[in-house]
Amino acid sequence: MSKREEIKDGFSSSNRKSGLVYTKILGWIDLGHACGDDAKRLKAILFEEKDRKYFPEFNDWYFPVDYFQEMVKHLRFGLDLWAGVHAPLMVRSCLSNEMKKRIALTIMKQTAWRFEAFQATTMIAKFTDSGFSGEDLVSDLLGFYRVFGTGIDPLILAMPTTKNYALSIWDHYGPIGNFKNKEFRPLLFPQPVPPKKQTPRKGYLPSWLNYIQPLNDLNENSLSNRHYDAPKNNFFPDNNRLNEELYVSLRRKPSKEDNLLRQKNFEMPSHFYINNHKPSSPDYFHSTNNF
Image (cartoon, rainbow, N blue to C red):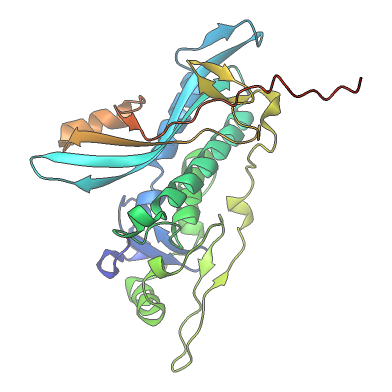
């Protein structure tokens, strides 16, 4: 849930990991989403290929990937309650760097969308307006390109504005959480011209935030869902759907040392699934043959 007091000056916020800035090309940007910490972790997993294993049924090598997005509720007694979306996956080994970037974007986009949908559920929406908040998905995409992309920092290319300008946008249109956006496209807010009341409009992604394309067909087995630590085809009737599990996790509040260690730890934190998915069962009583 973004608040007015979180608004920062865009010209001096490129290294911040929290706060809100307004940009002329991408609209509002949540610096927590855009810092790219989850993308850095995903990149390290994909390029390290830890615990890869040969699977005879696929005649190929695969390694596990655990990608997750989560939120936290601070409790008493030094405890935090975390909830989020976890994608347990397998990726084929020895792929090109460009293919790994496409796989990473596929994972991020599907998981981020599912996480926003989770936040938009009735149960969570009682406490926050973050579900599909206008800045979230485009901020995730910006964070991805800051890690997997090349060239100038895309946050700079997005033309961040001063804090005073951003405040004028907020005061004219209201909280960004009131505007929902289910696409990885910017939501732009024209400069206020009182007394006329203006409305936001959808923008288009610039070329420097659109040159990596996600996979459009998972049947090539470069990226698979994971079941019992092995690649699993046909996990869902829709073969292009990744498995994203809802989970909760109770943890103690981290110290500074814990936070530094977590940045180097690529493993999924301890958790409990909420009604986890099972692979689709084959229909032994249906035949497509004509006798």
